[in-house]
Image: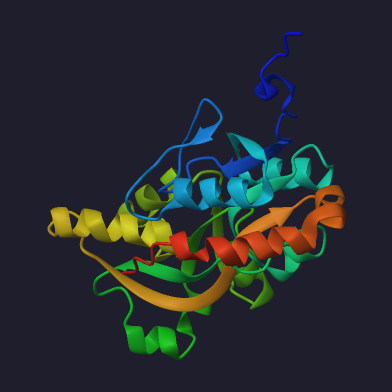
Length: 233
C-alpha cells in the first residue's frame, strides 16, 4: 500500500498578525516580511522569535494610533518595535524588555546647551514630537509646556529646519539616522543630540494573545536578545 510523504500531513504553523509603526526609522515591511538590514537586526530577531514560538508572523505597517487600536481590539496580535510607557501599559500588555532604548533631544547648535537641558529648561522650549509616541507621553506626563505634534516621523526635521520648533524629541533610531546625515554633510545638518531618557522597549501584545501566550513569549524574547545590534549615537 502506497503512503503519502509525512510532510503532506504536517500541521501548518500558526499565523500571527504583527504590526510595525509606519515610517519608523530602520525597519521596513515587504510582502508581509520584515526586511533584513545591518543596523539593528530586526529580521534576525523576528526569525528567532518565530522559531522559538513555532509560528509565522505576517507584518503590516500602519500609523501608531491605528496599530494601538487594532491591537487593543485583538485585530493584531503584536506590535514591534515599541517603546514602553505607562499610558500604553494601561491597555496593552508589554513583553519583557528586548532592548534599552534612548530618547534624544535634537536641536540646532547655539539654540540651547546641554547644561540648560540638564537643568530642565527644555520644559519651556517648543518641542516637535510624533503623535502617539512614548516621547509624547513623556512630555505630557512631565509638564512640558509647548508641544507640537506631527503624524509622521518624516515631518519632524523640516519643523526644526524652518525654526518652527527649538527641539525635537525622538527615539534612538531616528537620532541615529540624523547623526548619519550630520556626518555626511555637517554644514547642512548643524545639529546636536542630547540623551534625556532611557526606556525599556520590545513588543506590545493584544489582550487575547497575551492571556494565552505571555510566559512563553517572554521566554522567546529573552532568547532572542542575542540578535539585537546595539548601535547608539
